[in-house]
Image 1 (cartoon, rainbow over the protein chains, first blue to last red):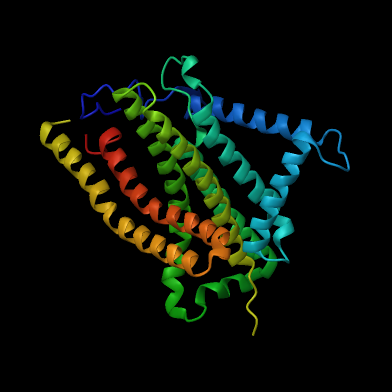
Image 2: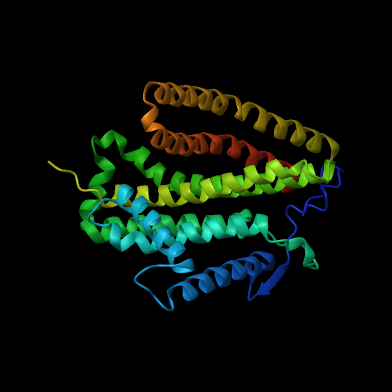
Length: 242
Length: 81
């Protein structure tokens, strides 16, 4: 790890310090795993308790879950299309919920009370590995969606409307996951950094509005990630009408 | 890291965010202008316009964030050190 060019004590903010776990030949970032397990456990707990006793008139958690389901179904239907959205609703919904709960969990849960030997707990999505994994999943998903629905006719998409577009469309396949992952990672890390720097300068009250702005942008980022995933899948399964 | 590399990295990090925020700033301004005009002309469409505006603002914002990612890499994970 490079020493910081700035000697500023960044409010105990540790960018680039990780809790390493050795797994075979790989060094993995333990703090990301710990916080994402918390996120997964929270999501599972809410979903399981909400769907244990289904009622005709939804109340409480079931009501919330049905609202979420409606919301995600509208996103999926709008961008993927009437025909294929049912197959992809679980994927889009999982992406949205995981990213949303990660972002908000990173901001709302007081992780600082738990001391790690190295690195610090935070939103799992503020680690580039998490976001790249999610973005590559989206890439695989839209290739699979296109190939399974259209077979090799999927590759006609690359030469439509003209074969001149071929290089651009190929480059696009690489820039899609790149921009997806960098957007999410940068936004979440930027939120955390801004809050940390402000809290370092003025520890009281002043960081609060920025924290709320951070909550807002992280919710929007979750929505954008899910929307773009749906849009890419929709683009892949879209049938041209001749 | 020798001092010239760290000086260049800090300057480059500042430039990455500073220059990278010019374009998205202009873009966000003109997008908001369009949205405000749309709402003024058709107040009943406000909800839909607001949703689309927020989504597109976030897209433009991500361009600045790319600059920020470059700046963060230069400051905290410098490949030339």
